[in-house]
Amino acid sequence: MIRLDHVTKRFKLKGETRYIVRDVTFTIPRGNSIGLIGRNGAGKSTLLKLIAGTIKPTSGKILRHANISFPLGFSGSFNGSLTGEQNVRFVARIYGHDTDQLVDYVQDFAELGRSYYMPVKTYSSGMKARLAFGVSMGIDFDYYLVDEITAVGDTNFKKKCKKVFQEKLHKSDIIMVSHAVPTLREYCSAGIVLEDGVLTYFPDISDAVEMHANNMARR
Image 1 (cartoon, helix red, strand yellow):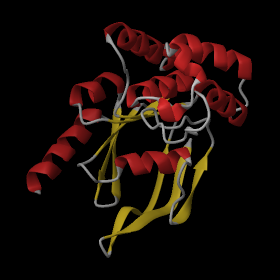
Image 2 (cartoon, helix red, strand yellow):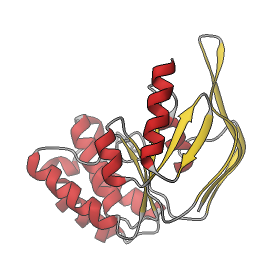
Image 3 (tube, rainbow, N blue to C red):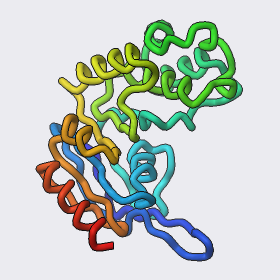
Image 4 (spheres, helix red, strand yellow):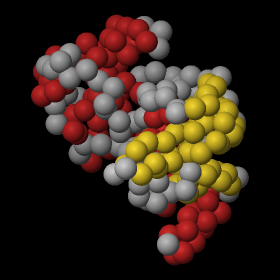
């Protein structure tokens, strides 16, 4: 279970205060894969980072009674001066995972070749995404946080990503940000619409998609 308890996240933009969420109390239970929907700039990626714990709320607290991944598609948590392999070892220690096992898994999965032993700052965005996806798939999480990405690389690699991701979802839930409605319908049963700092939950992803469409048409 993930619980937001009176959570507010705000920041200044061009002298104005902008809210991502405003005094939100909300519980995300286990057993539902959820699509997080909202307009561009609504703060969906920021909300994922709040849930992951990579950034802190302005006020309130987030209770995590579950093992939660960092956002797939977000490689900002990697240290650019360390190699891919060294970053994987660091992540393994943070999550209490067998270090050598995760290093071997990511080396095989990410298909980075010799680049695996080079500094991450020399990687392309696609290589960083492969590394991030490999690390996440190598650890069993209760929740996978997915930011606009479920597969990266060439056709064969995308197929491999999709296969292992679907296998994970047999026993894990996801919170997914995507603008692609077919992708949301494929992976998510429920939905959350983020609009003007307010979260609205729908047990049926179709209802969330409809509310978002109405919001877009209104503004």
